[in-house]
Image (cartoon, rainbow, N blue to C red):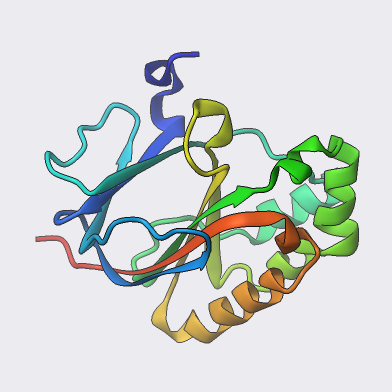
Length: 190
């Protein structure tokens, strides 16, 4: 499928000197860092990207994976929408998993993801304070497998830090071979 056909499901995070999100910090958790950027623009579908950029990471909103029906219902009920006015803090965390991860069957990955690591159960604890969206990148030839995007109000910053610390200590994270943690603040429009 051509990227153009993905419509608004395609999202591009463009690091450079323009964009509504100001980069507060960017650090490699595992592997190499991206070139430095002052701001990030978030572009949907065929929306034009800023003219100059240091890098662009693309991902697609896809079907939900590794989730059973009761978990999906709970996530849907508790999840807050992105773009809330009070959610002026964000994190973009691109992640690439190891070849060993992708050599596992879907059932084996689900077992690590939830039965061992409790990824969904842990994440639900922080809803609706922390809104999140996962973008799939592996199937469109990007350097990361997933782009994880989180938004939260400043008063929920410590909750977000706790979530990230918890998930990085799980069995699932042993299968991450590249991860970058980019923290952002949304600038007022105007």
